[in-house]
Amino acid sequence: MTTLADVIAVLDRLYNPAWAESWDAVGLVTGDPEQEVRRILFAVDPMRAVVDEAIEGGFDLLVTHHPLLLRGVNSVATTTPKGRIVHDLIRNNVALHVCHTNADNANPGVSDALAATIGLQNTRPLNPIPADPTDEPARQRGGGRVGVLMYPLPLTDFARLVAESLPGTEQGVRVSGDPDRIIETVAVVGGAGDSEFERVRAAGVDAYLTADLRHHPATEARAYGDPALVDVAHWASEWPWLPDAERLLIEGLAAQGSTVDTHISTLRTDAWNLRL
Image 1 (tube, one colour):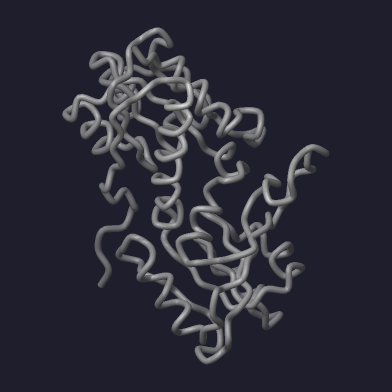
Image 2: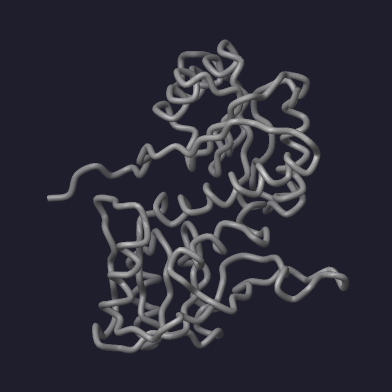
């Protein structure tokens, strides 16, 4: 029998909670470490539709990137949407485990998956965490990734590659820069990335792929002329991590003689569903 504790042990090796940012809320939200886990669902967001998918699909564990309870709460009564989710998870014996910024800072982590999706090579962390002396450079942890495309592309074609490589959303792919500019070196950050402009500029890349770029940081960044900006939906930028997490968990469980049935949610939990 594979227990929830068995699964968490592997997830914690892959995405150590100690790697999470101080403001984050990662780890087990609901569930008994001794309960049996036969089916696991991976998703970006623990939203109502995803929780219903987990319950209706008979999943024992829901692993998400984003936390359900990021900020402190005084109540999980069913009078609130999140309170109802907590009660429904417990009633249906569905555990919820969160790997957020600990997965962002892992290697491989969220930005590794985004980089691989668009074919970046020779990647390194954009914001490296001081490495253990025993770590190989290729395994250095930290946020974001910087790499090189297999073939240089005009910005328009690079943006098209991004659009074809990521799940579709109503936002699509927004681009800022000369459409004919040749893109070879790229920085990526899965999720909101406009706090990283200083590091991106210091990296000297041709393009920066991330999500949630706001008006003022983006216009200030463009005032420098470098790099070109490619902005996608937050959910789309982090969804490629799910297959990676699934594969690594299966491998980790197999190494200790355990097997589980896994599934990746394809529900689009991006907030926007219409563009006029």
